[in-house]
Image 1 (cartoon, rainbow, N blue to C red):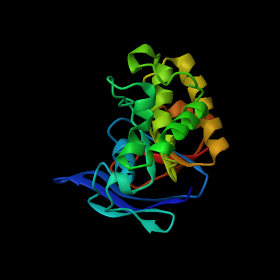
Image 2: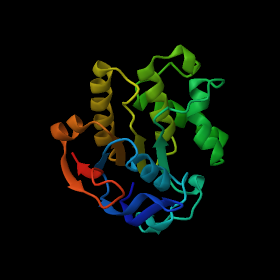
Image 3: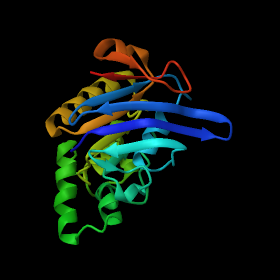
Length: 218
């Protein structure tokens, strides 16, 4: 686990600045919330941290390491996609193990680490099921387990509650917060609901392409 630092992080497509000079620091073990409307750069910021979108300028550091130009599999950041991005032809266990296999983890390590990740998200015994056999909340937990199994320094959550109904959204929000506190992971999540900020956060404005994007610490 480590701190996360963005320094002047920028992303442009042609003349359009999607993310404009974002600078912030998330200390080791803190939980950061990026808030704002659709299209203001929240997802792009998370994807730049994870390595799936190359920045146009600025830098990204995890701890003391500059990871700005490293490929995704060489930066120790776990990303939970908004769509969950589960492989339908793979079992739950195979989906969770995917990141370990990409990192060439020893076969002897994969099984125990997958089991540990599934236990953390309360999905013991679900390893042989397929995504189509799971509820939306369970699929979200599989995606979270896949991010946790690599033992990341930083956990990134791209609007993880947006596909859930209101009752389940509250339950999973509390579970994610409890899990973050249990593991002590430095975490950054994107949310669009302003009501979430009003309940749990104090907001600090960021400089970016939209004045509504802000960062908050619960």
